[in-house]
Image (tube, rainbow, N blue to C red; front, side, top):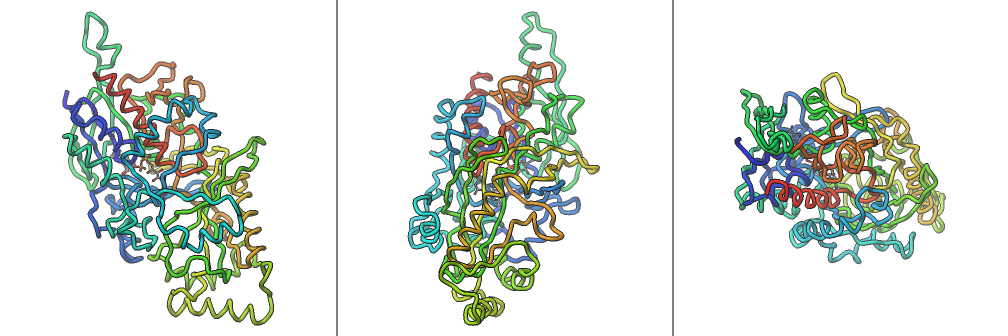
Length: 516
Ligand SMILES: Cc1cc2nc3c(=O)[nH]c(=O)nc-3n(C[C@H](O)[C@H](O)[C@H](O)COP(=O)(O)OP(=O)(O)OC[C@H]3O[C@@H](n4cnc5c(N)ncnc54)[C@H](O)[C@@H]3O)c2cc1C
């Protein structure tokens, strides 16, 4: 046997497992993306476009998976989507976890363990932010300051976290869990994709324990940029390819690793949506702003009438795309859904209109603290959606999520109403969620979840509460776990990285117990 454990993918699930097994087993972590250093991420729009991952650029950083009604951004690289996320590190409310087969009390120690490594911090100067003051004004008493895995002393507030932090300020996984793994002797193999997995035949064993525990797996690997196949064997596999990466993988392995009928069901967008309050004239955040760092929390009745958690997070547009957006919005706004509101104190008169126009023209010349974008707010919604997305395997073999009427989910409707009520108070133009834009026609998100939902029974679940893959007969595939966003049994209403990390902390402890 070449390895005790092979981990496929280096997002939150894979990195946590690698760190916790380090020094205790012979472990290989395989990542199809590349290692990024400080200053390696796109600095221009052209570089961002060139970083798109596709067949002729297999080492690209980001990719879209576009299904019916919804599309999702995913990331490849050592550290998974931590390389391009906002680092918001939040535990969902108990009411969300109460629906799970694992109780909040069972998970709490693992949340604490993950927090001790990720060490998120609130932005220390949050009270100076225009968006914090704005939330206090329009939603008194509801503001919650988020914690990000960001070293605020190095952060330049450019908001480019989502294209990769070139300042070395983000504490992404390659700077938290993965160094622990490497220091403990875990072998990290980047730019390599695991493409196949087959169970090894159990050896005859008088005690029968070989068959009971599983004889391990043979994996086929290939350099991501092309090259010859290689093979290795391992006692245990941890599939941590991210929501779509793991679904792609299991969809390919249906004959060797058959799953329950729940495979690909109950996918969620985590209520993800982007809204804008444009050119309100309020001094919302000035020219710069912290990356998404402050929020208001709500509850709204879901499709089933039960209360659902909604988080409306406010932030600034990334500086990388700001000049483009500043020029595009004045042209596009008349075509986009949403509405202009005079606000309680501003008028529609010629003076107000002239001021609005002047701010837009300022942006076309140069984006600065006097232009329209300096009083434009980007709101990212995270909510407990109904998780009615379904996986579909496309002709190219990649999985996409279909959810044709996602835009009508009650949490998105709630977001729209809230934004309109803010505009009614302060003025400005609401720009509705992308899914409602002509030609775009679908909502986009970056928190795809589910498809391999965890549960205590094989009916309705794909993995058990120990994250072991169920077989269709209700037994488990011995030594095969799925540990990433795909196992979340529903939307969280807050960003998911901390919950994935907590589940991985728990799975690592269980795995260590199993391999002794
Ligand atoms: C722009 C953006 C902003 C976000 N902001 C936040 C935020 O602020 N807070 C938050 O909590 N969450 C945020 N998220 C979401 C969060 O980052 C993801 O939910 C999380 O990273 C998912 O972790 P994961 O373990 O499922 O794996 P992922 O992070 O998806 O990583 C999976 C890795 O596996 C690799 N892989 C897949 N298949 C294979 C294979 N066959 N062989 C080898 N390697 C493979 C992939 O290349 C990838 O690197 C954001 C995401 C994005 C894209």
